[in-house]
Image (cartoon, rainbow, N blue to C red; front, side, top):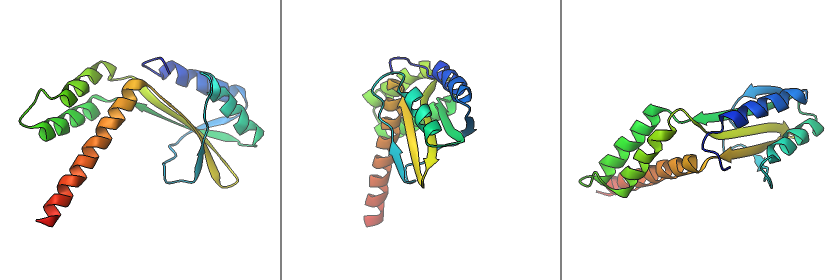
Length: 153
């Protein structure tokens, strides 16, 4: 996606889902659920996904969104600063500070429907959200490494 806010795309999705006679249910499909990820080949690939749901006989589609909240960014920055101590000007902290301009924006959308015991999933995200997720994963990995080292002592 070339946009930095998926809010209007979400509105389009809600309208298209309803226009296809399907209901929309707010729910997130986690990674540990058996699923098939729909691979879009164009910007409107999500419309094909909705049409596949309808053809499969789905009566509803799940929808989940992530809006960057100020408190989430503050938590990320606090953890990055703790891990970058004594260098508060590390590149990771600067990258997190760049994300401030995206607070309040929708960075991730997920659609899903169940068919024969499997969840079919469509996901899209902005570049800044992908960067935010990578930072969170890095912090988590570093934190688990530090905990492992503490267990060994």
